[in-house]
Amino acid sequence: MAEIDWKEARRYLGLHRGGGTVDEVLEAGLRDCGRALMACARPRSVWRRFPLALGEGRVETAGLQVESLHLRRHLEGCTAVCLFAATLGPEVDRLLHRASVTDVSRAVMIQACAASLLEVYCDECCAAIAAQTAAEGLTLRPRFSPGYGDAPLSCQGPLLSWLEARRIGISLTAGGLMLPEKSVTALIALRFAEERP
Image 1 (cartoon, rainbow, N blue to C red):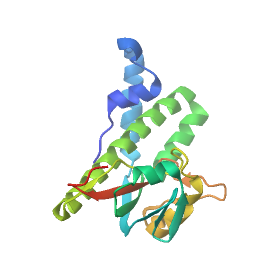
Image 2 (cartoon, rainbow, N blue to C red; image 1 turned 120 degrees about the vertical axis):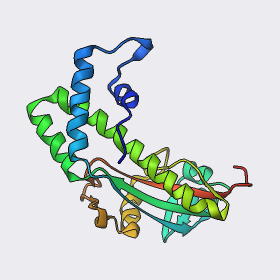
Image 3 (cartoon, rainbow, N blue to C red; image 1 turned 135 degrees about the vertical axis):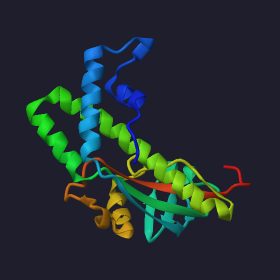
């Protein structure tokens, strides 16, 4: 299972700026929050590969048409894309909710640990995708999530639908919020190794 990257968790909290040291009490609190998070996190992911078509300022894949210059540029030279979703599970949301009611500073530390853990888990998933596609001579570009640059969050619903993300417990509220909150969606571009962006 993925582990918390403590350096990143501290960075999310704004600690270690300017090369300073972390207060021992804060560090102990952060580690305790990390243990509580690891005890309840149940990371899960799903991904599916689709062909890709690039238009003028837009991207088309899996029946989705996304108007985004930034995503279009990111996918230049690619012919396929993996739609991807991952979550830490609903127990993490419950842990965060309890902490936000009883101890806000603890909730902030759990948030930082959860953000770090989710990032590490997504990196592990991408490494697995890369290993599976390497035999075809394909390499991965970095993940690109709805909401980055000018990529609209409105494509999140269709993306989750195509992935059948409910199978791993991810849903979307009427207001567009992903549940569990510690979840992520992304497009991962595939290109042949000999090509250059």
